[in-house]
Length: 137
Ligand SMILES: [Cu+2]
Image (cartoon, rainbow, N blue to C red; front, side, top):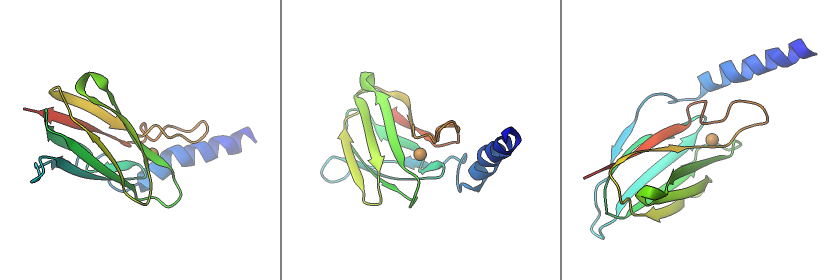
């Protein structure tokens, strides 16, 4: 029984992440400022990636992130915890686009990640579901 559990774990931890498309490769997106002065970014999340996963935005200009879940069955979210830079939010990713607005106030590179996790398996973040928001001058 223990051995079976071990095999199942190895399969899950080893094989399933390998099936995720796009995990690990860097996909950069530099936001442009719209006519209304807002930088708009679209992010798609899935197993176990964000696309794009490297977002570049200008400091002190409002940002609107619209995110969707590419997965039918696996729950995902998108978290940024950088209150010191004006960014502190969590989006539950759904089939329908969910939006969040904020204004980054400090130049730097800030992590974004999914904290979902199934039982004792590795978290989605550990499987590669993470990226960065880079705030520039
Ligand atoms: Cu996830």
